[in-house]
Amino acid sequence: MKLFEAKNVGKRFEGVIALKSADFKIEGSKICGVVGANGSGKTTFARICAGLVKADDGQIFIDGKKVEINSPFDAKKLGIVLVHQNLSLIPDLSVWENINLGHEKRSNNIFFDNKYAKQKAQEVLNDLSPDEISINDKVSGLSPGQMQIVEIAKALSQNPKLLILDEPTAALEYFQVERLFKKIKELKEKNISVILISHRLWEITTLCDVVYVFRNGETVGEVDFSSQPRDENLIVPLVIGANGSIDYIKKDKRELGESKTVLKLENVTFLNKISNINLTVKRGEVLGLGGLNGQGQEELLMLLSGVLRPTDGKMYLEGKEIKLTHPMDAIRKGIFLVPGDRQKDGLFMSQTIFNNVIYPRFSQKKERFILDFKSLYQKTDEIISKVSLVPALKELLVGNLSGGNQQKVVFGRWLQFSSKVLLLNDPAKGIDIQAKNDLYKLVRGLAHEGTSVVLYASSNEELINNCDRVIIMFEGKFVEEICHEEICAEKLIKSSLRVG
Ligand SMILES: Nc1ncnc2c1ncn2[C@@H]1O[C@H](COP(=O)(O)OP(=O)(O)OP(=O)(O)O)[C@@H](O)[C@H]1O
Ligand SMILES: [Mg+2]
Image (cartoon, rainbow, N blue to C red; front, side):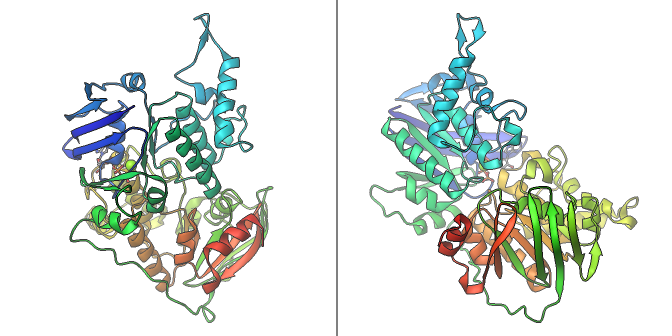
């Protein structure tokens, strides 16, 4: 594609302006970044280009000619393929079936050509993930990162001319990110244009030729790295606006020696996923769980929150043994989980923000039947303002919020309770830089007030900036503990890979 251009593209959803006026241009085989705060319209723009949403205003041109994109079919004919922010795979089908789904080749125009389909799936996967995923694996058994890779493979198998990736790396390990970046660079060499939507500015400055910034549904700026330095500081002011500035949190050195032990685990084991974990977490401590993706961190958080039950070992809260048989048990004891998969485990997508915020209250005995709606409305408004939810409308359906704003609801709902232990599974996934900083400020504020926090983050930077101690996990075991100033990127990576 020589030139893809969008002019004044706009979209409203029942009164909400999702996109006011997007202007966008990508010339030749370039890698073009799109950044912007949560809810600034990036996904809406991508969905319009891919024919999943019809724009209300504006025009799209390809190679100077105006085109109509009224359906995914139209987009596909034009060579535009989108890798969704929320995965679109069918869990019960195999990897190769998913990769070919919707664009199957038929032999003799009658039967699906399965041999060809498998071969094609293998080819695209070879580049992205040579030894990690088998084409015959069922998608439901894959980790979120592996699912993301299959989703990208599915897009690549359609031979796009313009590939749009909407936050493709949020669930990926850094080595998976490296492979993906290599692949994106190869696509560029093959004259394929790529649009990369991301909140991770280092990805944008490393990989892109040019970046567009969206703010409140408008394109507010463009940074072209062929003439400007690859500097995040050129992008941040455009993202947050002229009057905004980010008050970056600084890590404070804290002495927790005298603090009481809140959480204690003795030989906790879960099937073959977690073995013999011994752990203590102090009052007010922020404990990080490091290591490669899928080394048992998620299972450990689920054991601590009553989603899973240990097959062996004991857990204590403030010195008393606890047996959690249900997440509600944990909630009643002041142990709260922000799950990793917000759509599946964290939200009722077809319910309002208000209902999603108040539902944990049903675990409190006294509130099971009688609810004081006036005070709950007020509490919900307070939470909406604390997490800077956009739009700040408690009656809006959660499914209509942008990805990052959905994540704010999952986290924010716990702010109405006093928490003893807060369990965070990659809480900043998909959250913009300002909101991420605000979120961790809230987390650290809670820790200062005495909440113990157990944090798993896929980004090392979040562990480095926020944890008092990090424990590296490998194959369900604790393999190393890193404390205070020792916590740095090099050490985290080396011990995750078990080198050095
Ligand atoms: N189907 C819908 N109905 C109502 N509002 C919607 C719908 N889809 C999106 N919106 C709203 O449009 C705005 C833009 O959303 P969009 O998902 O495009 O943001 P985004 O820039 O991708 O954000 P994020 O970084 O959080 O993914 C948001 O305010 C969102 O709530
Ligand atoms: Mg989005």
